[in-house]
Structure formats: structure tokens, C-alpha cells
Image (tube, rainbow, N blue to C red; front, side):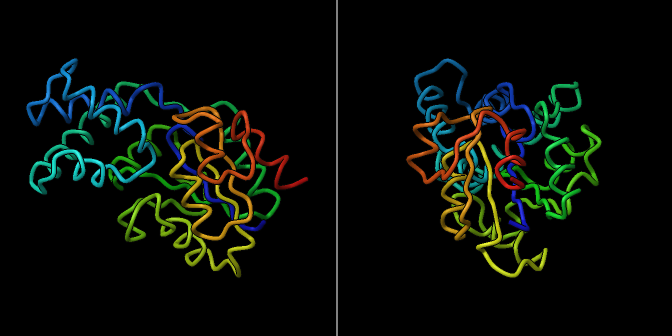
Length: 221
């Protein structure tokens, strides 16, 4: 493996419910009150599709482009406010794992379902502007997860020779689908985020790890 494609929230960055808090603000912006039956149904969909591009989620939920865009803007503003308030930290061992992989000659790309603005806000809060070789959001690739675009864009941008040299890791079933559809031989699920082992396995995980800190041991032997 010469290329390692890593998810952010839930995989290398602690989520701690921030996505759900930001979603509540987005839903309220569209008249859906927290605790209502409509909110509960929407939240169930958000949990099931963790890892997907957020604008795609809002398009599904609201069925109208203007409402989806407004909800997405409200989500981003709420999430960025939480980050600015200090609710953003790296998962234990994540920075060290990335440094070890890069130190052993692997290229590391961080991907997200957030917008570029939100992704950059997280990277700035963590001091991670140069932690990886490349960072990608759905707008950089064309489509977000569960499509293979993010992983394949990482491969193309890093001039990796083959999909067989790529490992993909994340905390959601959609991360697993992205890796499988991109042809990666190693698709590792981690148990520090949204989905459990059963969901990760069902969507194609070749390995399930306690955390991203275990990944160098798998890839570097």
C-alpha cells in the first residue's frame, strides 16, 4: 500500500455528537423542531447515511434544492460555531498514525463529506494544515460517498499507479462502499464513529479496527 485515504469526523477527528447538533440547527432553519416526529425520522436518516455528502443528505430530506441549500448553510454555520467553541479534537493516536504512515513513505489523503469551508475550519482548529499530503471534499471529486470519486481522485492527484496500492479507512458503511467501489484491496472500518462492526462488515470492510491508531500495524507489518 502506497496510498492511504482516511476519513475525518469519526475516524481521525472526534465527532462527539457534533454532526447531530449541527443537523438539529439545520432542521430548525427549515421549520423542523427538535424532538418532533419529523425530526426523529430525519435524524434516523442522517445516522444511517453518515459519511455521505451533507448537501446530498439535505436534498433527500427536503426534496427541494432551495431548502436543501439553506439547510446545508445552516448546518455548516452551526458546525463551524461548535468548532470555534473548542469542540474539535483529534482522536487518540490519529496524528501519530498519519505521521508514521508518511514517515514510512506512504501518501495520506484526508477526505470528508463536509464542504471545503468546514473541512478547512476543522484542519485549522487542529493545526492540521500540513498533516496530510492532500485533503479532499466532495466538491473536489464530483460526488461524495458512497461513490468511489473521493478515493479515485486521491489516487489521481497523488499519481498512485494502481487502485491495488490504495487503502481506505473510515467509520461508516459509506466509507466502506467508497473503498470497495474504488477497488481498494484494504478497506478498514474503525469503531470510533458512527457505525458498528456489523454495518461496516455488511458494506465491505476487509478489516475492523478499534481505532485508526491500529492502521499502521496492518499496512506496515
